Image (cartoon, rainbow, N blue to C red; front, side, top):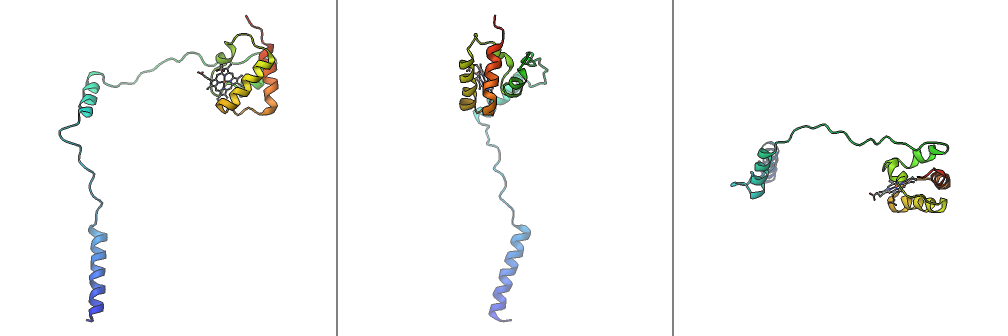
Amino acid sequence: MSFQNFCYGIVAVAGISLALFGKSPPAPPAPYPPTPEALRFAAAEAAYPFHNASIELPAGDRQFQGPGAEVANANCLSCHSAGMVLNQPPLSRAVWEEEVRKMRTAYHAPVAEADVEPIAKYLASLPRP
Ligand code: HEC
């Protein structure tokens, strides 16, 4: 056997052993003694065990009503309830237009330019207490 072949042999055996027996290092064990955070968490879990609960959310199905409401229903209910809009003091059409534009610029509401005016017109037309 030539020296060169001997070297190839060594490299091949090393490669195969690495492929067969090479393992990634094991995850570090949990610290012992446990950290103060871990102890506090365990104590809290023992004192207040988690359990499932069913809650009733306040009715959020309120929609805009009346003529012209569709455009507001389509644009203004994805982030907050209609109540957020309807519980405002009476505002002029121009101020409502500003408000709708604010939703677009400040909160990135995807309201089409063509819908801004109809929404403002509808909101200004609503009867107010
Ligand atoms: C992309 C999400 C989003 C959409 C869509 C959206 N809004 Fe808002 N709106 C917000 C956020 C956020 C607030 C602030 C909530 C808070 O202060 O708790 C808000 C608040 C409001 C307020 C309360 C006053 C104020 O300026 O904070 C009004 C009125 C309002 N929105 C009207 C509308 C109208 C009309 C539409 C439909 C054109 C609309 N919103 C669509 C995100 C949105």
